[in-house]
Image (cartoon, rainbow, N blue to C red; front, side, top):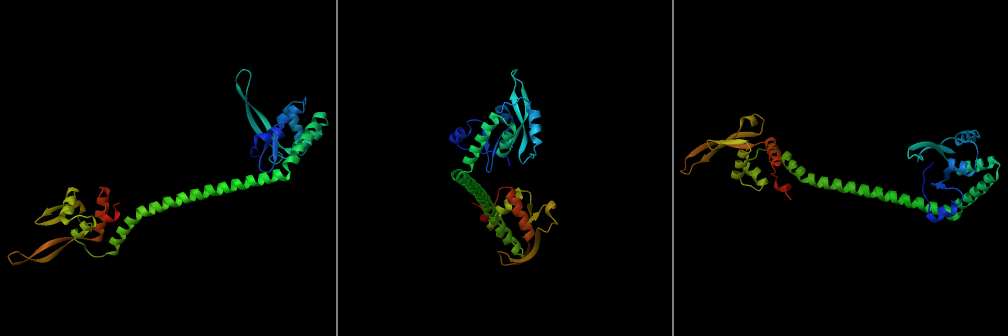
Length: 266
């Protein structure tokens, strides 16, 4: 892998005296172009690096190509190809050169390797790796905790609605408008008036009837009841009762108009 993690500024200054190097979790890498320049090779970089590859180095294991950008003297931006190579590959290339520069840089690479593999450096990398793992776990836990809190809030927001639905669905009987009105903290006259304003029902002959578009939907049931007049005479009249389907219809309609049952009110 070729993922860079910079060490401290002090360490980089100490270890990068001859050539700039990069660090990741398990290896040191550097620029093949910068190595080519340091070695003072007369051959063009593109030809030289191809010749180095012929020594048996493998792409994405020992090196990887990089497209870099630079600005020309005329101020134009141009691209060029560089290669990020491992320290092991750099040591072999330095040895192949058979020059004083090659010998110098190879000794430098060996010193880098010695410091990189020192118990202190290994421990520091292990601690840094552990720190990042802990940080990643904390971030994951924070994310899960936030998601759980959001789910809890959503459940708490839906619970009153679910409770009211359950109350309705558990009941199979017909209910009077006075019972429905009570769920909303109203009296029957106020609820009837509100349903009239919403275009649900109208009053005729002392009875509330549904407008035509709501009839034949199974929302209400009319029942004949016996009554006693004030003068003592017996009589009958029609009474509108709501089915549980009708009760759910009223719940959705009233909710859309900002009217909630007491159980859902804050």
